Image (cartoon, rainbow over all chains, first blue to last red; front, side):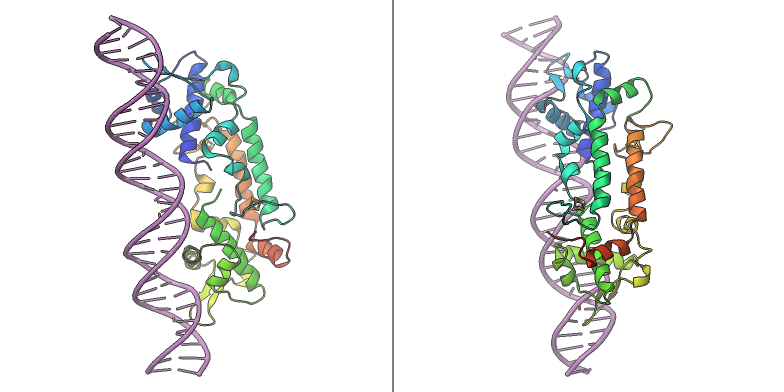
Length: 144
Length: 144
DNA sequence: TTAATTTAAGACAAATTTATCATAAATGAA
DNA sequence: TTCATTTATGATAAATTTGTCTTAAATTAA
Ligand code: SF4
Ligand code: SF4
C-alpha cells in the first residue's frame, strides 16, 4: 500500500501529534521507540516533513519535534502521503499505462477508479488530529 | 498498487486470454508487443504463471502460451496477484504492524479495513474471462 | 536425424528503496 | 565562551526489485 518511508512517516507524525497535544516536544529517539522504526531512516523522513512544513523542530538540548496544535485538524493523511510518496497513489496507473482515460479505459478501469476514489476520499478526510486523539485516548496503538 | 512484475503479469494474462478465445497460441514476443512490457522479465513472470497452472505453454515451433477457455471464468484477478505478489496486498498491514487486530487497532484500522475489503472483493469477483472479453471487443486497451 | 524455433531456468546486472554512518549546524545551560 | 545535546545533511552501504543475457530443454518440420 505505502512505502516503508511512508509507513514510518505516518506513524511518526501520529506519535508526535499525540505528544504535542500534551505540549511535549519529542526527540527522534523517543519517536522510534514508540513506533518501532529505524532511527536514522526515520530521522531523515521526519526531517523531510519539517521541510514540507508539516512538522516543526528545534535543535539543541530541550529540542525535538512537535506539531502546531492549531494545524492538526488541517493536516490530512493525504498531505503526509503526498509529501513522502508523491501523488502516484492517487494518479498512478494500476497497470502502468501512461494515462488513465474514461474514453479509452484499461480493462480494469471502472473497477480501479472506484477503489482509488474511495482511498483518496478516505485519506483526504482523515486528519492527524483525529488519529492522534485516538492514540492518546488509548483507543489505538502504533506498535505490537 | 501492484509491483511491476504484477502489472506485466496481469496485462500478459489478459492479452493471452483474449487470443485464446480466438484459439490462437501466442509467443512471448507477441505478448510484449501488445502489452508494452520488457520481454525477458515478462517471460519470467509468465513462466511463473505456467508453473502455477494459470497459463499453459507449448515449446518449440508453433508453440506459445494460451489459457484453457473453460477455466477463464474461474481464474480471478486475485489468483494472478496472489501468484505474483503473494497475499501481502490482502493481509499486509498498511502501517507495517505485525498483525491486524480489531481489539487493538492501529489508528487507521477501521478506515483501512474497509478499503482493503473492497479491493479484495473486487479482485475476487473479477474474472480473466470478463477482462479479456472487453479487450477482444475493443472496449478496453492494454497500451497507450 | 538435423536444424530451426520456442519456452525454461538460472546467472548476472542495473536501478530503486531501505537503511546506516559521519559530520555539520543550531541551540541552550553552565 | 565552552560544552553537551539535538536536528540537518550528505555520503555510503545493504537489500530488494527490476531487468538482461546465456544456455538448456522441448517440439516440430524437413
Ligand atoms: S483505471 Fe486502468 S488506466 Fe486508469 S489508472 Fe487504473 S489501471 Fe491505469
Ligand atoms: S488496519 Fe491498521 S493494523 Fe490493520 S493492517 Fe491496516 S494498518 Fe495494519
